[in-house]
Length: 389
Image (cartoon, rainbow, N blue to C red; front, side, top):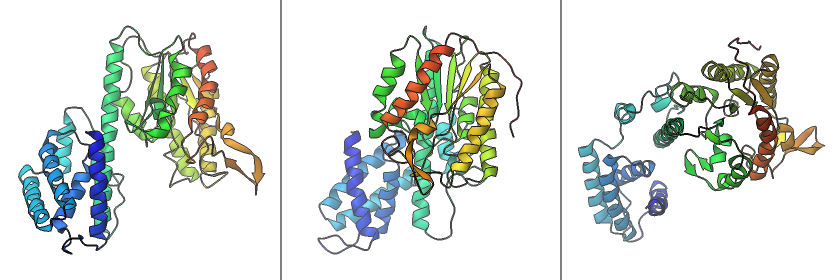
């Protein structure tokens, strides 16, 4: 079913491209009604939804796809009208925020940025004009946020299940897509490049006498991780993990790489550490440095990244009883200087952001002996918070 939906999505995407570019259907030269374009575009953004309210819409849409392929324009108009009526009858042409919040309400709170409710209107940039682009951008935002919330709920369920088990996890890794790659997924869905990381995880962590688990979510910033920890993603059993690894911050430093924002990012990461130590006082924290990114180093964001890493390292040096700073960034840089810059290794970071399986092997190889050393030594419980400026 999953593959068939993707195939249908590709077909309709081609049709939408033809229609929105002014092309016509081959048989009679009639363009697909704008009504159908809007309906199908909305369905595409919800193609993976498992909510029951979409089932009838999906069934009717398949008939619309079939008729388009048969080049029966009159039937397309009829089907589009029926689909529009069905959407209006179910109140689901574009589920409003209140409806979607209600759909998720039983799962607890929602983040301030979720569903466009943040101070800046969510993650969607509001611009004058380009209404179609803005509508699609909002639809993509909603779909991404739904995937994000599903990941969070899945992790909460995993932690609850593990708490009740006789073999709780000894090591947990929190973070963004780099930490999620240990699972072989991107926003909870299997993803090709990350699937190659799975054998690295299995070889370095699953075969150890201690038990490890990864809880990263692609796209997360420090504030997102902090919210997740405050809303169910912390172990709740009597036995706490012995080690928690945290790699977060690279998504905080994308558009804004000023030194002021670097300080804010560092403070947000320290907020995560403080919460972890408050709730898990006997747990070691592995503070994983933000990795280099981009094609060359230094670059526009390198000073900000270095600033955050320096602050994290200083915090670890002031709190050696429970924070341990680990920086493998230099391994991702080439040896040769060209114009005062080094290349970020394409073999280790093919997309200039995510480590390849080889890059993740370097990280795992560096972490494994540190974990082995700390696993048998409780952290020093200290709730004194040291400010780093």
